[in-house]
Image 1 (cartoon, rainbow, N blue to C red):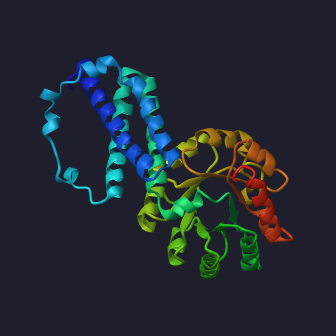
Image 2: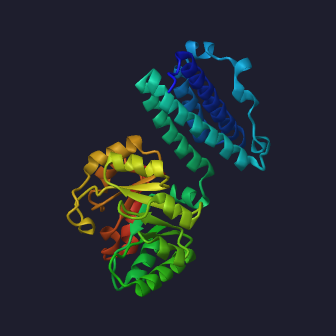
Length: 343
């Protein structure tokens, strides 16, 4: 294997820094002038500025455009943009590919450069989801309260009572019921959620989610890989993943989760024998998660305040609603509390 010269490495880094920054600027202009979305435009700008310090003079000096064999390489697809979405998708892919190259070759120059570009690549994945994500994912981002059901005889009535309290997101979770009954209950819940125009997800079972046309699925660590679930469900459905620590968070985001569960925050019979992740993981998620996340596990009206103080703006609830004497009132109270940080 021929040893790469410092000049070759510099040219690779220079070309991909240019590519990433140009792609980000193309996306930024749309966010700024067409969408007039300050948040997305600012994220593009911050990503460009995070790359700028690595684009140093010696890399620019290594540039040799006239002798670059790649300038003559092209593909018919590069001349075709069917609509703005295709334009944005192409430029986001360009940025992601460039960051991957920078991550790998940057390690040869400075390990910190590789680490930085890896983190930026995850941020671009999140930017892509926010900009091009399905309408379902965009709706999920607006949901501060997430009801995860538990099996009970009055399941439908309890969920409807919660919906009457303002709930906008429901997950059907039932580990042990036989499939025919589980399908019927999921079907009934799906119809109820359609009546109230709220999102409906199914826990674990991609087949069941498909059977009732759910809005998506929530997967545990031992369930199907996200890529497989995405292939089965299609690009527009929501896919969530449970995580209990930073390593699982990073993996879930890299695999394409639309959102993650963060917990269990407290000990809960729903996760019997599972050591609580604690508020420390909530604090970590608040600082580091690049996708929407819901704190979950033993959360109720008594401890919700400290979960919010740790950084949670979205929470998933089981017993505090499913076992409430008045699920409508319990839901409304939780939403009121969450509205302090989600006005």
